[in-house]
Length: 497
Ligand SMILES: Cc1cc2nc3c(=O)[nH]c(=O)nc-3n(C[C@H](O)[C@H](O)[C@H](O)COP(=O)(O)OP(=O)(O)OC[C@H]3O[C@@H](n4cnc5c(N)ncnc54)[C@H](O)[C@@H]3O)c2cc1C
Image (cartoon, rainbow, N blue to C red):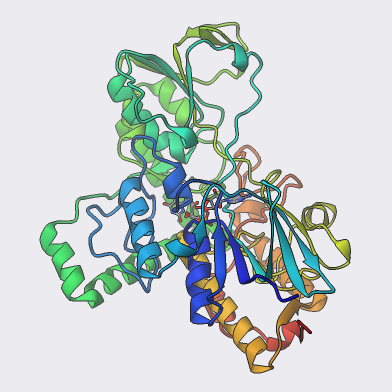
């Protein structure tokens, strides 16, 4: 039996949409994008907490082939990203091929039929020649199992399920977590709450955010002369690239640059926070770059406010009206905000059960061996499978660098398969091993292995202590290899149906 679809994409974020656009360009237009939420946009649909904005300037955080001249700020707020996602979906005719409220449970390669069978949680099965997993990195919310949390009598909100109708005015709030989300949220909550206690486990490096409104005449210029926005993108991307490649990936060779970034963050802390003890508590004891750097002009200053308190004792348990720390102190609260982030390595990689050739289970394979994916996109024994959120796939600081390199990889791979008149592809063991060895080797120079990251608790590391998320090369290299990888790194085959 011929499969129902050319391709099934799982996830309607910027990854899944990029995959859909590329499938159309390749002539594989009979595809469906399955999404568990009730709308598109992924990260930018799910997250809508106060203060949400990009932390990469918007000229760079967008598809290069679909610039948006209408960003109102250098770092656009989350609402504009959601609007941009909707614009892309409409312009590229993706929306009619999206199916919402559809939770994908798993996918199994049918060797006989040479296609994938995708199971949906309502019991339905769909078949497709190709499957593309775009389920996101930061898409599985995490709540630590604090003893007693179920007994809490007040309001509990996770940042991924923000209640827009909830009024924080006059509340006694606690925020647990001081990651990138908390850095954006804390100043906003402090504006409304009567009292705010921030529970910090690990301090975060924060550098000033050079943010400003983009005046209308500049927006008009970007619209009328797209080359100007392109130039702005190039300048911004180059700066990010320097920070990432020199400061993080070549830490061993360029320590002074990394240290300079840390000094900038320390100076920012010193000039922002009045109290010496609070400054000490907010100073990280791990190297800059072990965690994704964060940008804010408001975060540190918030801790000067009378009604804001920083708590660094660990949480022992939660009671109906408060949080008790290990030293026995109870902070009375009526609102508990969980900025506790996401579970990457236990629940993602992969986010759904994927069974490939010879019954190999991808999750088990990754856990029993090492997390790996050739060029961060394909895995041996998983024919016709594109894994967009893979180990070693995240390239550079803007996610769009990653997805666009992956779209290019798809173009070259599918192009060659079609040229040969074939319908299946699978990466060779040899090519995959060679890539894994190469990235492992390169990571040696990075801050992750040459720096002091042991106290960072960074999501860049997996449960085996490997920094297996980022591709340790320049984005230029990622894009070059996406259009020049050896075509024989794959085997190609025909399908009788
Ligand atoms: C608050 C926040 C701010 C961020 N800011 C930036 C930034 O400034 N710059 C940057 O580069 N990156 C940022 N990121 C990272 C961001 O996730 C990526 O930039 C990008 O949006 C990822 O797109 P994606 O499509 O891969 O994943 P997502 O946007 O997470 O989309 C994945 C989709 O898959 C769906 N899905 C998952 N499992 C299933 C299933 N089983 N069945 C059906 N559907 C499923 C999810 O519901 C989701 O809609 C941020 C992330 C967060 C959480």
